[in-house]
Length: 193
Image (cartoon, rainbow, N blue to C red; front, side, top):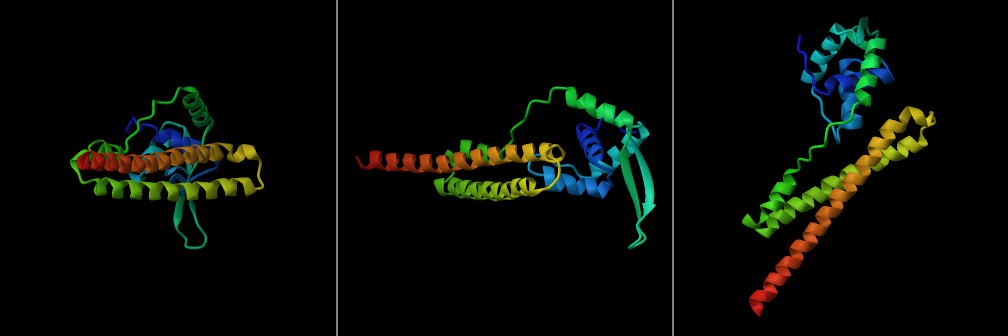
C-alpha cells in the first residue's frame, strides 16, 4: 500500500466529514469548489480512498443504483478518520508556493516584442475577470442559501479569498500594462530628443 498521499487524504477526509462520498462525487466537489486553488486527479483519489479504508480512516459500502443498476462504492469517514482530520487541521499549513508563468514571461519580457507581453497580460486580465465573476456568483449563492451559515462558512471564506486574489492579480496586470505603455512613451521621447 502506498504510504504518502500528500494532502489528498485530508481533502478526502474533509469532504467525507461533510457527507458520505463516492470517488466521482469527490472529484466533482474538488472541480466545483476548489479548482481555483487545488486540483486532484482520479489517479490520486481512488488509491487514496483505498488507503483510507485500509488504515481505518474510512469505511466503504458497495451499493447498486436503481436507475441504471450500476454499482457504486460510497465512502464514509470513521471516528478514527475524524480524529486524523482534526489532528491535521491543528497543524500549521505549509508555506504557500506561488507559481505564475505569466510572471516569468513578464520578468523576461524585454527579450520579446512589447506587444507579445501585452497580449499575455490581456489574456491574464480576462482569465482573472472570468474567475472573479464565477466567484461572485458563488458568494451570491452562499448568501441566498437558507441553511445554517456554519454549514457553508468554510466554502464562503475560500471563495472570498479567491475574490481578493483574483482582484489583486487583475489589478496588477492592468497596472503592468500602464507601466509598459509609460515606459514606451518615455523611450520614444528620449529617442526623439
